[in-house]
Length: 508
Image 1 (cartoon, rainbow, N blue to C red):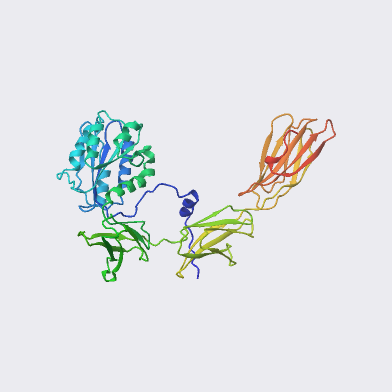
Image 2: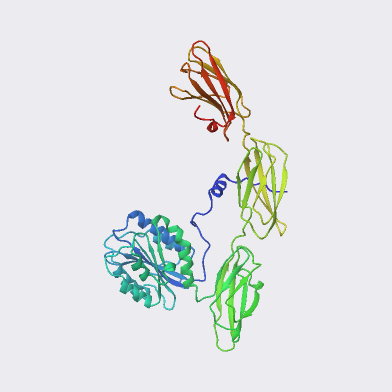
């Protein structure tokens, strides 16, 4: 049986609008990292309260996926103000929850923007055991600034870089590019960002990945994590001639299922596949060298939840007899898709089959002005099936007004009448463009098929258009030219056929 799960309106609308919004909310956790990360936060009076609060949100979004602890990532904040102040030492907060609260509770100090003093203070704290800093771990400084400083930054910043600190700069103002590019680590295109404070989420992932390149560089770690695989990378310790690596990995809760692989000493990475989703694995890399002893490196990796298709369904390009169905994501594990569709209410359904490499199809030969239930089912290579449903509505067929005619009702007055249009008409719009005098528009209910037109001067030629109104489409209007004969001769009309009102000939 194919499951029929009705797609929520919220999910449908999010997919329709697009999915290019920056990442927000919980992110997959990042382990296998070790480093001291220091935020140099502009807390001076040149920063507004709003800007300060947005920067705090950015700081938390940036570090949220990290694992914190004495053998993982530690972080601290130093305020740039008249005098530099440390908000908390590196080793004070060892959990994500505690660190998030600490960042949220950070208060702006105001005062002058003495960045040089803050950098000199940071140089002391980044290498101070009293501040919780650790020796022999990567040091990263992230300076968030509005681009203004009241003292010199070049000398203290160079001292930090000479001591091995990697400097990233995020300028939310109009900072001097030459000055800031010289202050940031090289190359500046990787370490310097100019961005409006409201657009900080745009650079979050790029900056986080650049930080990870530094704090993961000298350890075994996993990247490209999916629900069934991840890629291990490690520093070059051996060569083809000096030895090989032994890799051992097993689920944390079932170490008896340990698997072992050997790779050449020339390798610095390996993809592990056929893994269980949402499972934590213990991984050990053992360098087998015939020259030196290298201690084993270990890491812990958790695979992602299994990706499901379809997770989103979109109905678009709806017409009277067809609509377009698309879905996402497309997965290699899907063999094909089945699209069931039928009118509501009713028990009649039809089936379309689509290859697993495609994510859309056109559904045709439908009834106008009808609601359909569309169910997209992914048939996996493993034999299982996943389904998601959405409602689709065909449009009404285009209809036109027929037999527009006129009756003389006295001096300067005509009665315009017409036959009803097909379909569910919401009403009619009658436009009269007078040769002399103002134009007029009259809207009437669908039950009314005639109107009185007044103030039509004798001897003038006037254009009258009647157009049906529908809910989901434009109706086709019928226009006629009407000449008011002088004296008692009445009127005569010339038809312009069935045209959309915007297409009615002008200038007559």
